[in-house]
Length: 159
Image 1 (cartoon, rainbow, N blue to C red):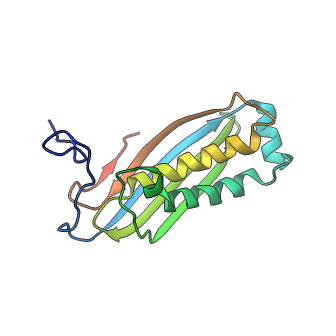
Image 2: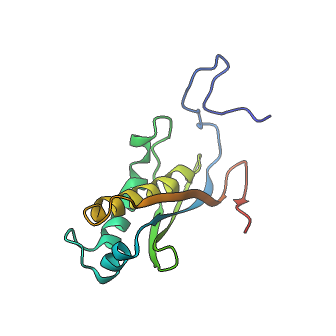
């Protein structure tokens, strides 16, 4: 069984010391979605919500969320991201918004949490901006899709 890296030999939580690790190029991609009623979807698609352009605001919020991950997740290292991308796509079949985020850096620790935080904050922003129209929206399926770099190498969700 693998050992949890954020737990010390006494079972106490601690921040991992990454000082001796080599710098490598690290990339992570995460996805998630916000499911909503068709009427709410139509309002967002038409740009008719009082708070403004939902997708642009959520995109910027996701980028800001990635940059602030270490402020939100207690044992995450503050990272110097070299790139963060957040894409939002309206999906009639859901109906709702598909969210994808990628984070990149050259460093000693991975960027999975930054990509996941970007998706989460973008989803929360969509909810916040559209909650006057619908309070039953569901934020769902937030997950890591792919990561590369570091000792553990490449990981990709199949399918």
